[in-house]
Length: 126
Figure (cartoon, rainbow, N blue to C red):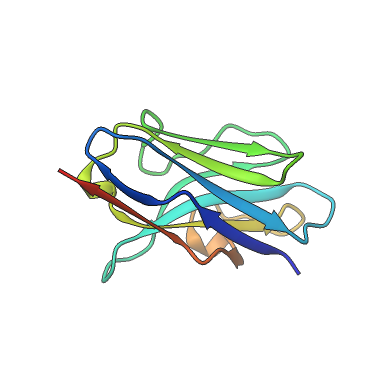
């Protein structure tokens, strides 16, 4: 069974940086869709960025590409999210998600993914 575990969250001041990690285990062979999402309590979950491990340009639904960078270490099976120039509005619980590349993909949105980590809190103070 595939499991995803996020880490790297924490508290930073505005303008700071964090790198989130998502370690996966139990992967079968084949490419995967992977993504980062975030959610503020009481609000809907929103997509941050998605990528296809088989090779594709990252998809940033809300144009955070200037500050956030997704990357995937295939050898270690770790997905990263580098976040720079953080703002207070980036405060949220961040989740990584995955879906087998053999299954239908509906774009960088929560409904495209069926595997989720437990989340890691990111707090940005002004």
